Each structure stands twice: as C-alpha cells, then as structure tokens.
Length: 299
Ligand code: GLU
Image (tube, rainbow, N blue to C red; front, side, top):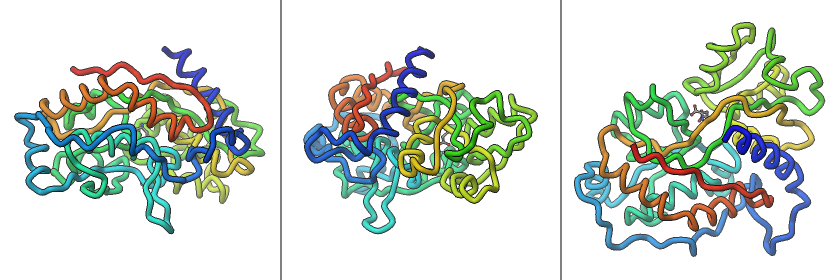
C-alpha cells in the first residue's frame, strides 16, 4: 500500500507539473486550474431515497437543504473562485455526489467553509450535516464524530520555494520553520515526531503558502495532494519535495452515532466505483494520472 501511494504521489507530482502541456483531451480538464468539472452525467439526484433511522437526513429533508462543510482555498480539492464564486475540486464533487444520493440537487446544498481546527465541533454542534474536505480518518476524531469512507488516500508531504536546495525530505526539518494548519494531523506529527523543527500554525493552508512566499517560513507541510494543488498553480515559484511520509485516509465527516447515514453513504461509495472514477478523472486525474478508489471501511 505504502509503495502504491508513493508511486501515485510521484506520478501525480510529475503529471501536475506537466499539466500545462497535457491538453490531449478535447476541452481540457480542470485539474488545479479552477475550471468547473462537468460531472452532471455521472449520477442523478436520487428521487426515492430509502434511508430509515438517520436523524441527520430527516432534519435536512425537512429543511429542504443539506449543509456541507468544505475547504475553499485548496485548488484541485476544495476551491472557491473569488470572482465567479464557483466551487471546484475533487472534494466538492464528492460532496455533490453524496448530496445527490440523498436526494439533494446542487442548488439544495449550502456549502460552508470551515477550517481544519473547527470541523469536529461544527459536526457536534449540528452546524453542518457532513464535512468533505481533506479530512483524515483518525481514532481521536472518531471519539467525537464518525466517518464514511475512505474515499481517497494520500500522505504528508513538503512544499518549498522552487529555488530551495536544502530541504529535500522530512529528514531536513531540524531548525526550519515548518508551517501547517491548526488542528491538522500534519502539525501534530511535526510536534510529536520532529522535535527540532519549529512549528508555525495558521488557520488555513493558503496562509502558510503566503508565508512561504514572503520568506517568513521555510516549508509548508500537509497532505501531498493539497501541496500538489498549490504547486500546480505556481510551478515557477513552488515545488513539492520528497516522498509522502504518513498515510492519510480521507473520510466524510458525519455526526457521531448516525450509523444509518454512515452505512448508506458507504454503500453509495462502494457501489459507485464508476462514478468515483469519473469524478477523479474530471478533477485530480485531469492531467492523466490514474488512481484507484480505496476500499471502504464500513465499521
Ligand atoms: N488530512 C489532514 C487532516 O485532516 C490534513 C489536511 C487538513 O487539515 O484538512 O488533518
């Protein structure tokens, strides 16, 4: 598994860097570019939802709206265009698919941008019905919430300035200012396992990328998939270095104890491998890199 991830990440790095010249598909693809993916033909809005015993689903149905927490500064995954207001990326498309499976069309989704540190509490408070945004499944988080999935697997990586020569892997972090998001698994890993690194935290990763560009930090660390999105937007300024050094399995965050909803979404993911592939191909895979859907863990 480790090897598969590493190979995929390396291939994704290569492909995303090259994505500017990969225009083989007619119409091109969205990748990290912020274009809107056309996934409308991959699935339909379910009109006969058979889901008993889910308080989350019942409340959303009553409201006629489903509230989904997302990221909006992570190109290729969860991104909001400042001008058009369009939300794009793999996570956004997974969110729309899950909503459609529950009978909610795109205009019946209320997206809410919530940073890493506030996700569990937003679900506990009932501010949102689910969260789809680079959200690693961990035992600690499972004490407060539940997860459907995983729906994709990545690992912690490193982003530096293009001309940086002294950080090549996680072995080079001693004495370096290492930036990540508050409440994330990568900042925790730095604090726990890299005692000589100097951790710097912000609410969201785009603040770390700004700090990298203005020289106030040396390196940004988070999931390789997220970092590749930033690097693909500014390939002349930024680069991803090294190999992924953790395993991050992305899940759909759900209110704790809503097992009916969790089993339902897990079945949608399991039965929907063609839809998953179509969504992947239209977003992260638009540069031509192949990936496989991970096996769902319906605990
Ligand atoms: N996947 C990691 C996490 O859930 C890092 C990305 C993020 O902060 O969303 O903490």
